[in-house]
Length: 153
Image (cartoon, rainbow, N blue to C red; front, top):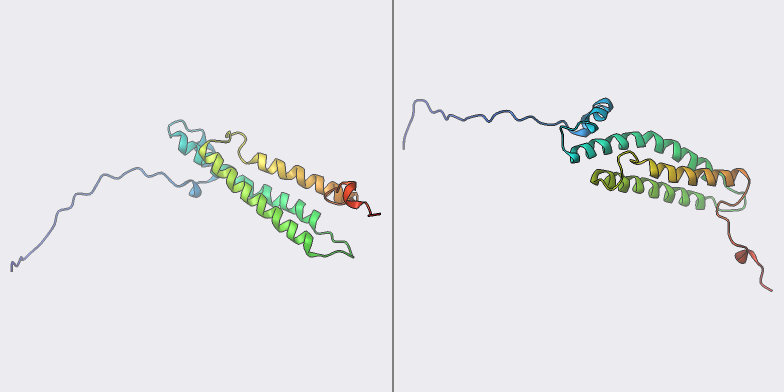
């Protein structure tokens, strides 16, 4: 057994490393400057661009889902109420999942940075505007061919 009056251990501290702030914690102005910064790698630029598009997608998605809510809120008196609810939940599910897939494609560079997530919004805006037009003109949301409406002889 060894006893010491004083026992110390010298530990060398490593040099402080420059840590990058996570893109989730950056402000929008920092993201805009970061995605144009050529000093960082292409992967970092893609991640900054994807985060910026993801943040801009939230308010746009709110407006588009409001358009879909106006379309699916109408029910006819003699028909079931829950068919529109099921279709609305399915539309939300498809829209949110497609946004997630497009975000992953944007991070990997499979979608051009300028296009971003706007193509998803454009597809669902055209679909929502078409359905809204059909609802406003008292037409069925999905036109069925005459073959299904013919009565048997």
